[in-house]
Amino acid sequence: MKINQPWIDAAPTRAVCDAMAFGGAEIYFVGGCVRNALLNVAVSDLDLATSLSPQEVVERAEHAGLKAIPTGIEHGTVTVVSGGIAHEITTFRKDIATDGRRAVVAFAESISEDAQRRDFTMNALYARPDGEVVDPIGGLADLQARKVRFIGEARNRIREDYLRILRYFRFHSWYGDPDTGFDPEALAAISDTMDGLDHLSRERVGAEMIKLLAASDPAPSVAAMRQLGVLSYVLPGADDRALAPLIHLEGTLKVQPELRLAALGGENLHVHLRLSKAMAARVALFRDCAVSTASAAELGYRHGADFAWRAMILRAALLETPLSPNLETDISVGSASAFPVVAKDLMPDLSGPELGQALKTLETKWIASGFSMTRKELIDSYRA
Image 1: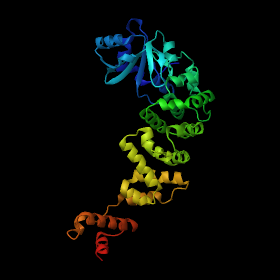
Image 2 (image 1 turned 30 degrees about the vertical axis):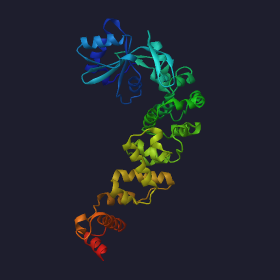
Image 3 (image 1 turned 45 degrees about the vertical axis):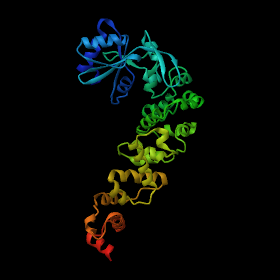
Image 4 (image 1 turned 180 degrees about the horizontal axis):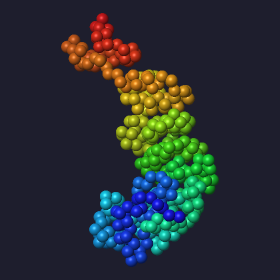
């Protein structure tokens, strides 16, 4: 089997492979780029594995006039930039010690050893520079079956890095066959090792959850997490009942993980997942608007049409109610409306806090009128 995609034959990438392969050295594409190419999914990152030492990678890159950046040279990784494209090249490695968060690695001598240290069989697929696929541990069959399976003994793989518990559900969301379901061995191992999640930083947990929720339909994976107790472990108080209805109602809307986080809820979500301030604020705003009594038109006016759509479908999912047939019209009216009264209309009679309160009162009256009251009607109503 061969990969036949434009990126593998692109001149900048060919230059990198030619420089590394000179003299018979081994160089392979590996991981996500191979997996995605075989699934006809977009490839964003180019990772390669090689028999060369990091210093040899640097020397060969510089000799070929390419830029070499020692991004993780202590772990065997050098990023080689060619034609503006980053190629992350890592020397064959094997784990010699782990603590559940990070591994102590040593350079390995073969592609087989390198494959054994990876997490899932579908991520241990390699391809030569000509595109020929190399499958050291039988991952191709799992990939074709869309089966997410740990390499070797699942418990051992998880104990090497407990983040693999969450990665398992994330990969199932993105690449697993929903009809086949989950690998029983993987679920049993996760159940037995779940307390290892305590070893992880909240930042790593949060980043993994966001990636999981960015999949087109993460609801089955999140449901499995809830059934095993993983969801409540990483996000106490979370409830996934609204997630599947929300995903259905999203339709063709571009996925926003923060909306799905708002559907899950949970206690101190921003603390448990270490969200950025901006994302935490957006999650909270989605949730607050969804459980408020504000109309669709008011949400459109205050936050724009896209936000209003999302807040209203979240409300429908949480309340298990259908969307209003007038929703599109209501949001359009609200988002196109502009409050006709400005501060100077009430000056100099009012100033300071009184002026602010008056404007707020008039705005509330205007919204209640369906945005129909004119500037004159509003001012006259206040002075009456």
